[in-house]
Length: 136
Image (cartoon, rainbow, N blue to C red; front, top):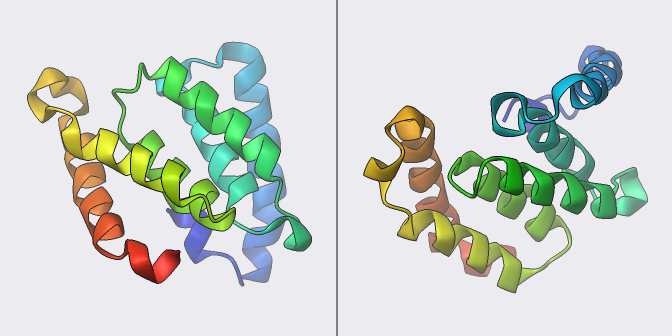
């Protein structure tokens, strides 16, 4: 995700404050926009770093859970981001595995409108599961 690759860039920090405000505004206008994409972004944003470095794990979890609801657990990038950012950051192996198993068990043909995003998410979930012992 773009956010994870911009962690050390000073210019991106200023931009992130603006992006956060834009995402909050999207939530006010239409929180369901693109299957809860604003919740997905904010969950990743708040969960991408530990609390002692400015992360907000509780807010992250709340946003991810809402994104899952709005996407009916069928927009798989939400589960992958939830596992990769929040679950890894708070060292919740059980949640990490549960979310990624949900992705791996999801039949790709059941949501053709999400086919590409879900296929990419499924590939990433497999990679994360293969490396689970490195994270926990």
